[in-house]
Length: 62
Image 1: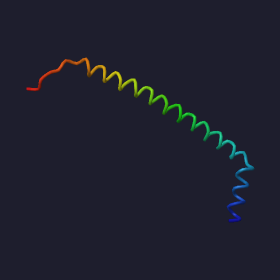
Image 2: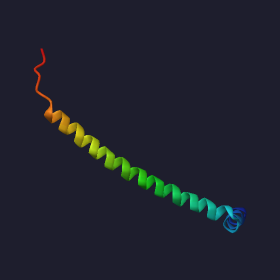
Image 3: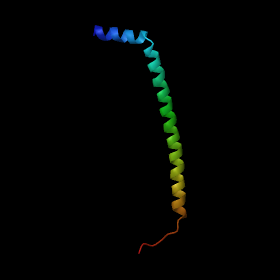
Image 4: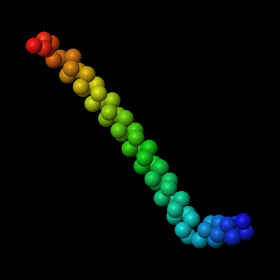
C-alpha cells in the first residue's frame, strides 16, 4: 500500500499527470462533439429515407 501511495504522489507531482488529464478532457470533448454530430446527421438521414420511401410508387410484387 505504501508503494502505491508513493507512486501516486510521484505521478501527481510530475509533469505527466496534468498533461494526461488535459488529454483526457480533450478526448472527452471530442467524443461528446462526435456523438452529437452523429446523432444530428443520423436523424437527418433517417428523415430523408422516410421521405423517399413515402414518395415511391407502390409496386405490386409479381
